[in-house]
Each structure stands twice: as C-alpha cells, then as structure tokens.
Length: 332
Ligand code: G3H
Ligand code: 13P
Ligand code: ZN
Image 1 (cartoon, protein in one colour):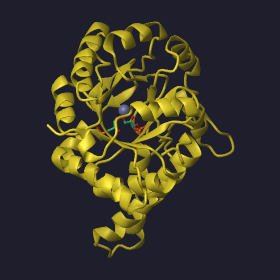
Image 2 (cartoon, helix red, strand yellow):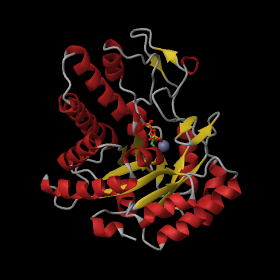
Image 3 (cartoon, helix red, strand yellow):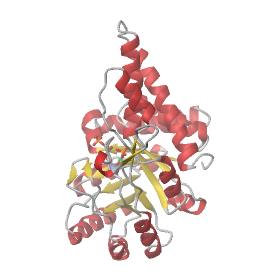
Image 4 (cartoon, protein in one colour):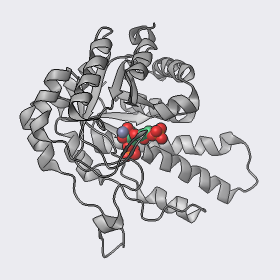
C-alpha cells in the first residue's frame, strides 16, 4: 500500500472546489506514454495549471501500471525541476469498471478513481459506487461516478445510444453513493466521430460538419438539483480540423471526424463542470505530427525525430486547452 501523498500527488477535492468558485475547469488528460506525459507536465508547469493525469484500463494494459505509477511520481519531480514549486497534479483512474480495479489503484498510489457503473441498472450503479467510495475515502482518495450513458465506446463500457443523465436522479445518487464528483451525459461522446453526418448540419462556406449543441438545459437542471456539486464532462475533444486535414493530407483517412466545438466547452467550464476529459485531441496531434515527418522524410527512422515533433505539438495543444478553453492557467 502506498499513499498518493507520499508521491507528491493531490486528490481532486480542493481542485474542484476552487474551479467551481473560480468559473474554470481542470484539464483531465489521458496518457499512455512518456511523450504525452512530458507534454502534459510541460504545459501545466508553463501555465501553472492544476492537472489530472488519467490512466484508462487500456493504458494500464498497454504501459504497465507499475511503470505508469512511477511515471506519475516522476512527473511531480519533473514539474518541480521546471520551476513549478507546488505542483497540483492528480493521478486518476479513468473508467474503472470494477471494485477490484479501483481498489488496486487506490492501493497503488492513485489519488482519484472513477467507478463507471453507468451501464448497470440504477440500484447496482449505486451499490458498486458506494462500495468504491467507502474504500477510497479511507485513504482520502476521491471518487468520480457516472450517471447516464454516453454514446459510443466508453473504454470497455459500450452503449448503443446516448441516454442523457436524468436530473431527477442526481440528488438520490449523490447522497446515497457519497461520490465526490459526477460524470454526466449531455451529448458528448468518446473518440473522433462524436456525431454522424446525419446528426450535423454543414457550414455552407467550408463544407465542414457543424454538430448539434450540447444539452445545456439538462446541465442547468442538474446544477439546480445539486448546487456547487462537481460535474465532469467526458468525451470533450474538439477534433481540431487542422489535425484531421494534416492526417488526411499525409496518407491518413479520417472522413467526417467531428468533435465538440470549443465555444461549448468554454461555456461548460464556467459552470459547475469542473473536470473536462480530453484524450482524442492529443492522439490526433501526435498522429498528425508523425504522419507529416514520415511523409516529408521517408528516410527517417530515429523515433526521437518523429516522437519529438509529436510531443511539441501535443504541448501546444495542451497549452491552448488550458489557456483558451478551460481557463485553468495561473490557478496552481
Ligand atoms: O474514455 C476513453 C479514453 O479516451 C481512454 O481510451 O481505453 O483507448 O485508453 P482507451
Ligand atoms: P475524448 O475521446 O473526447 O477525448 O474523451 C476522452 C475521455 O472522456 C476520457 O475519459
Ligand atoms: Zn471518458
């Protein structure tokens, strides 16, 4: 058993309270490798933004949980080396789907876990979430739960269609589970294809897809029921068209990829939404940079020569999200 406090990490309690008061949101960036982690820490240190490092169960399988844990510990030291005296960094399990997985992460030094039992019947979601909360809180680890189902693939949680969170359930759910934050469904979804072309309109000037707006009325209802309670938005990548274009111009094929427009995320960040999850945009930034090098320099085979530009591009993206979308710069 190792406490996250020994690793220099923080849980999300204070981060969220300050974010709600200050009308901004904390970035939750997924990471699977060293370059992503370097880029996240450099961006957070440069902008003095609190940050949540997220590990999915897929990332655990890909990179090994021991390695990821020590990488997060190393990230705290790296942040200090970059001149960030008091780094506010949380290590969070993204979409945990069992008590055992959440317990293992708590025992292993994570400062926050998500139990995603949103695909289970309501009472089972409550029971499993409550079990995780009881264990995690013994070690001051914060717990994110989910109510409502996002469209698309949630890691290993698969949903056929989007079911918005029902505002009438949130008080009962939050009270009975004791969760610290709640992920809700208001129209976001995971990945780079958040809406089908049929769900969108087309901008007549650019020919680009324009997605339908998020269900801010549902968010408003939830905030009325749970004033000041930390709300989380998953599936919040914007799928920047410049990356999609670079990928497509350099041998890739991402037809009709579409994300959540940044204005909508800016609006959400000013509300009780205090954690915004971004993974796909970083994957796009990485892939765009790598494809460009491969296309322009077919003789290149030193991974540092294509992972380096990819890392720089991701850092640029993270700084942009922090400063221009979430507003968390200067808050740590
Ligand atoms: O919510 C899903 C995250 O983007 C993690 O994705 O399961 O492919 O690591 P992953
Ligand atoms: P995106 O696929 O929109 O980046 O969402 C990531 C996410 O919600 C991780 O939990
Ligand atoms: Zn998610």
